[in-house]
Image 1 (cartoon, rainbow, N blue to C red):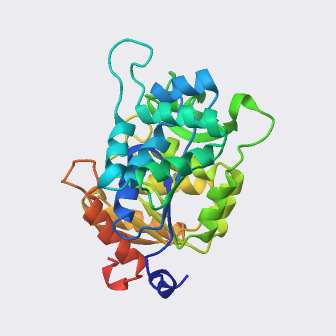
Image 2: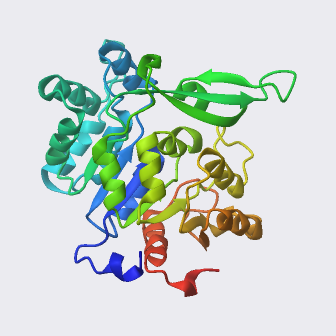
Image 3: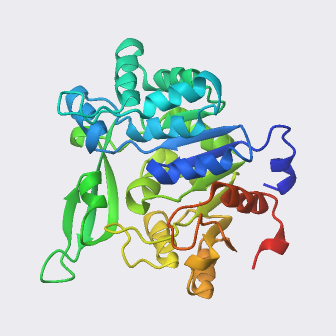
Length: 332
């Protein structure tokens, strides 16, 4: 896809951001500074907190990451802002509602009424004044498991850890993750057709930042979604984290994040890898790893503050714009 294809749209490029949790929120915050045409494709393997409770009790999709994506795209004034605040309100105390976010409960209620999680999310988008769309990567909750080393006296011994929360918090080294249909069903995870179509129709697709093994890589583990990512004509951009994440990627170098992408899907090609220049101690190694994915490397200052671990949405938006425009003078 040439740059003119992206920039010729009057309202901006069609953007798809894949992920979950806070990492996806920052991607969406940056993208909405560039274009109103945004689709969030969200992981659905969460098994902790309010989402885990609702999933176990009702058999529904875990709503927490979907709720966060809706709030990130909500209108910033009027009723959309009010609804976003309500969605994020969490009950305190010790009763049955303690710990539940209102948006999670509303999702559960709408699902009882409408029966279709896609329809529920579209309805919620209307309530919050979202101009884009929020979609689950699958319409059924998924179970996650990982191969982890470093948990035994033998450092090479591999254990299987099950559950997103357990994987995210393991003191061992995550080597590989897998997704399974809910309750160990006989079929592989099935993608939401709307999510597949969004990736195929996009002008730009973002992977990352976020929890690498539990929010970013899962999108490569759903066959139809993986195939769409491999075959789409969209510009594919990987946004790296600012700091390693304790548990999942402790002691990971920036280039190791790219290595595990290749390990999980060798056929995936990427157009650009965006990283904070202060978070890359050996730029040549990162460039070499990015080149292995077919990508150029864009180093820029995108952190809110040095060492903060948080991206600045305005700075990230500026760097993404440079990547989208293929401005070669910005490539170090």
